[in-house]
Length: 144
View 1: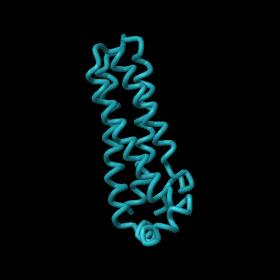
View 2: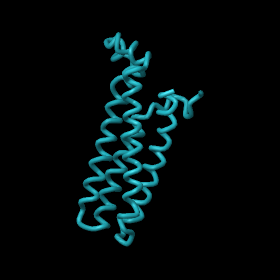
View 3: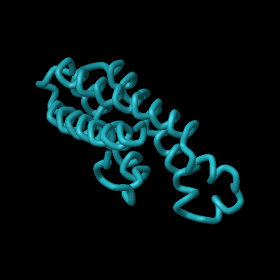
View 4: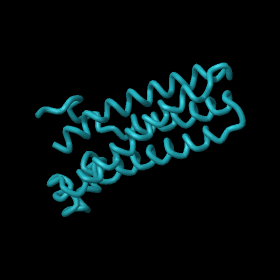
């Protein structure tokens, strides 16, 4: 069940990230108040944090992870197994950190145009890290 929720939440993360990205790009001219963009950035970051917590729960309870961890030498030689044990968690933690830091950096900028610019840069980088770290080989929607 945790895996199914984790899978569904991936789409909420991507959607709120895309919306935050679009809103930040619209505000680059400085006419849009950052107060309109900030809730989307917060939703994106909150979804990412929830996704991370679910991922950590999966890491603890998943029989697949336990099996992979029991044979770390074999896991590190196998690209798909290594992805789930090392690459996916590392990229996702990096994405959470980038989004969180980006929100703080954007909020503390001098004016709304600078806030939007910083939000856009951090959101683009975060989305690229997310896209690289998502296991696209998994079903796009969970089966219950």
